[in-house]
Amino acid sequence: FLALIRPVLEQRLANSACIGFSGELKLSFYRAGVRLEFHDGRLNKIEPWQPQPKEWGSAAYPGLTFLQVLFGYRTQDELEDAFVDCWSNTEIKCVLRALFPRQASNVLPVS
Image (cartoon, rainbow, N blue to C red; front, side):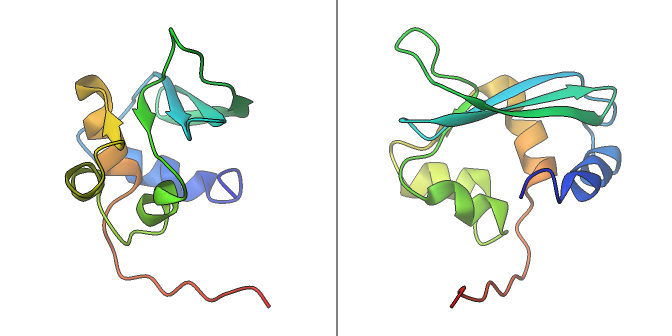
């Protein structure tokens, strides 16, 4: 799904204070994760990543909490206030806020 919305994510970065971001985001779901690699504001790689005890990543989301950020139901800050196991490194908070802003969304269940 992240690959599908890549153009939207890149546009959000371009319209933010994080324009031209280069670096990686390692998003931990505790048992699994995803690694996003950016170069000059372009999302170059999206790949599975396995969190390790000495490498927890850039941000962490227990259970399905990442979906709340992904679909705009809550901001990163709201998740961190609501769930003690949700956290993000200070250095990438700006990027997370730009990529996943709060917005009206209507997610329909798959039947």
